[in-house]
Structure formats: structure tokens, C-alpha cells
Length: 91
Image 1 (cartoon, rainbow, N blue to C red):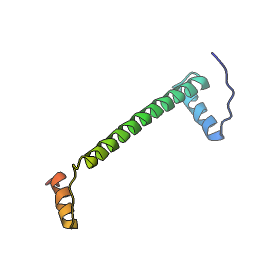
Image 2 (cartoon, rainbow, N blue to C red):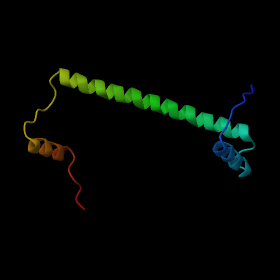
Image 3 (cartoon, rainbow, N blue to C red):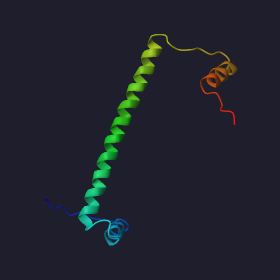
Image 4 (cartoon, rainbow, N blue to C red):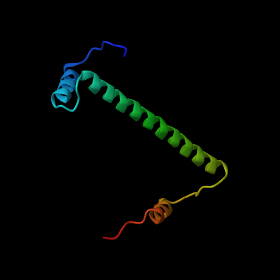
């Protein structure tokens, strides 16, 4: 397995040491590998969320282009419309 030297702040050195000393990990390399796996997973999730957001935005733009929207001239009309979409739950 390739070796790479990295510089750590005291905070992260202590974080690694605490995780190893707790017995959760056998050594610092395991902590770093697990941390990198989590970072990789989070970045993948973030990319998927961004792709979904872009898709939803495009759907909205397409609706606007096709004339699928409501026009409100009074703020009360907008409030009533939004209230109909999201009715308050009664306790």
C-alpha cells in the first residue's frame, strides 16, 4: 500500500489518537482511511443532490416556457394559494 506523509493540526492529531485509544480503530491509518471513505461518500451525495437540484430547476424553467404557472396580482391571492397547498395541521 502506498505511503503518503501529511501534516496535521493538533486537533486532528488528537482526534486520531482518541479514536485509536478508544479501541475503535487499530491504528492511525484506519482512522484516516475511514475518514476518507466518509468524505468520498459525502462528496458523491453532494454531487447527486446538485444534479437533482439542477434537474428540478430545469423542470421549473420548462413549465414557465410552456405557460404552466399561476399569476397573482394581490398578495392575499398568493397567500390563499399557498395556504391551499400547505394546509396547517389541526392539533
